[in-house]
Length: 184
Image (cartoon, rainbow, N blue to C red; front, side):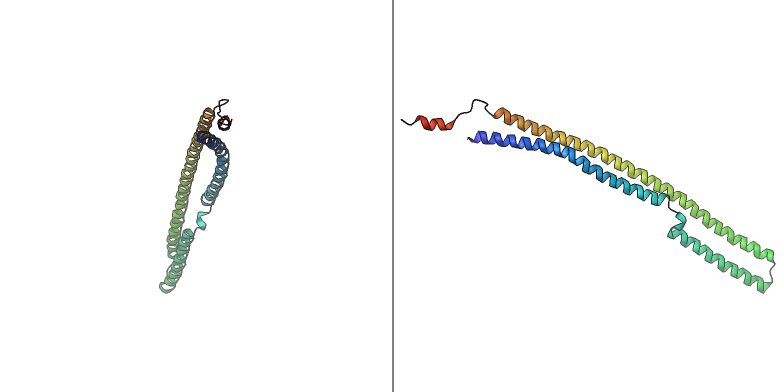
């Protein structure tokens, strides 16, 4: 067996391997990628549901703001009662001061509700942005996998074709006949 025949066989084997690898990668890669995409999509949807539908008033910032206003209202009511006990204020004056305090509580709750709406809009915008990024990644990966599979398949086919063209079908020389012709 000559070096040329060995190289032709090796070229054919590499072509066959490349073709099979291209076929395997083009079928198994997308399946694995699809599983990872489903996992990422489920994670994104879970994050969205937790943040969009969650009770913003249960957040630590909202609870702290409400607690500060409640404490302020309690202190103010105590001061108003003490002031009316010392100065002999009318009940109407006490009610008017308490109304002011309640308006401040109403303002804080309105601000918190406004922040909750802004929070929902930000979460929704981030969710849409993340979904679009995932969709773009999926399209790019699909395009790249298709091209890579086609390239491997084409390369393997070309190598296999060259190997088959290099084989001298029916025209092989047998070196063992040379050795036998020199004998008398």
